[in-house]
Length: 353
Image 1: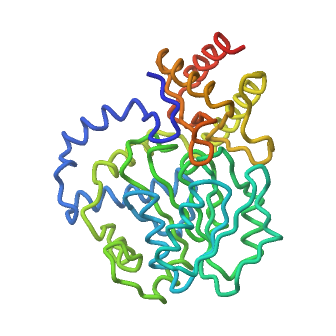
Image 2: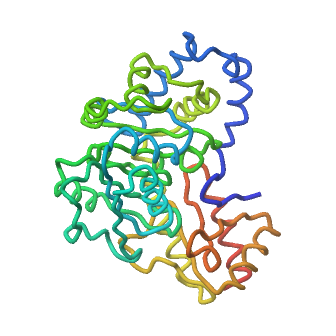
Image 3: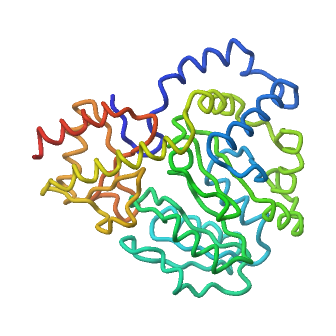
């Protein structure tokens, strides 16, 4: 089965051997306060900073999912309100979740075919945290490094948090331009779900300490205190962290991965522009995602297309949110090999050209 679903997506084939090695090395039952885990945790933090170009002074945390990060950020970095800028379902869900904990949270939506309107935003002066999704998985859009820089320059005194779930470990993100970044591993990391990574700037840590929220197992201040010794506040996903260690050791530096995905995304967009039965959902090339490609057609065609692909051993991603019925999505993640995309092209050329 060729899997182009945008998460959980295809895992690296080496994961099978990694799992055997984890069993043989005793990782599946090692104490999470013991020396073996501490060494594992320290190694992963170092590898992430080196391979993914994360600033050395940023602090890395292991959590269960990107959804958990929504909770941690609202609990630990706000006492009053956050402001959320979104153009798709996942950014909007983050906003809606924040409202449950902080009813004063604000939301600013913009059209998915337009760049984030940084100069037009009217974010309240009492906003403690600005939140947005760098790569919106629901509609195949992304926020460019230039836009992030503009946002950073306009709101220098406010913490900025970024959901990078569909781009972390795939794109060479400039983490220095925001205070908090997070992403789950079931996408560009090429690993099974159940683990997410959060990276926080020194300024973010100082902010969390100032608020001093400690009411939850995943309160950031407590998490930070534990990670000073490369431990967690809870029994972590040890096998997920081990798989992350092995994956990072075997993968090239993020700059090369980014270039490969960028080239392949351009090729895929060019390929799909030739079809008339369906079209690219995102018309504005400037905001098209490099890692998730969304295509749109009438409901019946999309449903039939996905069934036909599945019959031929190809799993396409369903649409999501308001685009659930009339779109399908294709992941452009590092674990998926070039030849698999050639097979995907052959399928579309045979049935829809």
